[in-house]
Amino acid sequence: MRIRNTFAAVVLVALSSAANANAQTLSYADAVTKLAQDCGSDIKKLCAGLNLGNGRIADCLEKNSPKVSAICKGTLSSVVASISQREQAQTAYEKVCKHDMSQRCSGVKGDGYVLACLIKAEKHVGKECNQAITDAGWR
Image (cartoon, rainbow, N blue to C red; front, side):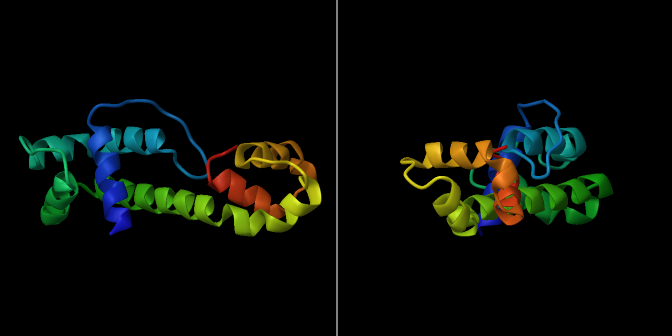
């Protein structure tokens, strides 16, 4: 259900945004841009006049799945997977980086300061922690 809500939020914003960037995981802004580029015509064609809230666009695309373009389906899949990976990395960050926090940033107070400490000490921080920070979109 969380992915559907995330998808619904991304689709909602996709109708009014445009920018372009690449990252290991997509930011919401990048996801919106990609969806707008690859799914905008499908949304306009299949979901015209639909109120955007409460997952209606996601429901519309799901209901009309056979009519949705292959590129839009692929983009939807990759965007949802990337946003999910980003959210999982943000949730797991403290657990994954616990050792590095105690080794490199002991005495540092405040979540933002600890994260800044880890980012500054990137070369001395473990691979998994660095990957979590990157996947979380904080670098």
